[in-house]
Image (cartoon, rainbow, N blue to C red; front, side, top):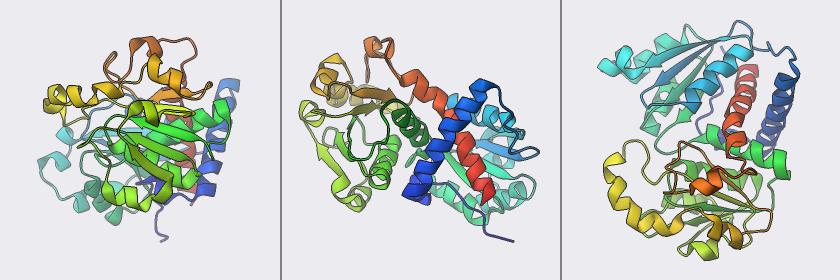
Amino acid sequence: MSTPRHFLTLMDLSAGELRALIHRAIALKAQRKAGDDQHSLAGKILAMIFTKASTRTRVSFEAGITQLGGNALFLSGADTQLGRGEPIEDSARVISSMVDLVMIRTFAHRDVERFAEQSAVPVINGLTDDYHPCQLLADMQTFFEVRGDISGHKVCWLGDGNNVCHSYMNAARLLDFELVVACPEGYDPSPALLEACGNHVTIERDPAVAVKQAHLLVTDVWASMGQEAEQSERIGPLAPYQLNQALLDIAAPDALYMHCLPAHRDEEITAELMDAPDTVIWQEAENRLHAQKALMELLLSA
């Protein structure tokens, strides 16, 4: 039996594969809107394992596999033996013997790696504390749709150097763009990952400097899931990094801005920008569906 192909970080794709996946997602989106048949994964079963709550991840994966002719199983930690202490490796052997694909959204990245090591089918990282690669597929698809290839452009991340930031760092080296991470002391992304990214990624403390001539500004909530108790203490240091019109005015004239959602309006991003008629945030959210359909096709064709 061949070794399954997993998608745990963006680095599981080559630059060429990532670009091809983005273009396939754009094509699938057009086909969907045209009402074309898309049953390329007819009869396939996706197991979705959640120990972190979700809206976009669950809806996009469940709708996506259904649109491609397959079916989805929702498995929460509270409703399975994973939540009662069964070893991840044992669950992986059993679950992967009954389905064609597994998506996991959880806390520790190592848990997804452990599951993948024993899985007989492809495993997708739907989000961990360290990475959110599926979000980057949607974000990059959105930029490609609106502005074309992102190679050579400047992107500015504003706020906490979290899991989405880490995936942006991987995207920068794969797609050859410049990423400036604007964050306060104590909120830096992984030092090891920063070193691995070389000159593709730099850190800048002054947000007004960081956004100059940036073609894309991106942010996320200041307290990720599991950090809610730290919310109040994070507001002070991160407040200067709010994505707002003042910073957008310093960026490139045609700059886009994105947020993976859910957002705390008027905290990390202003409601004014979220509700602007030319925002691509809602296009970005929808693209989770199309990008993940392309991803599932790719993994099951390996």
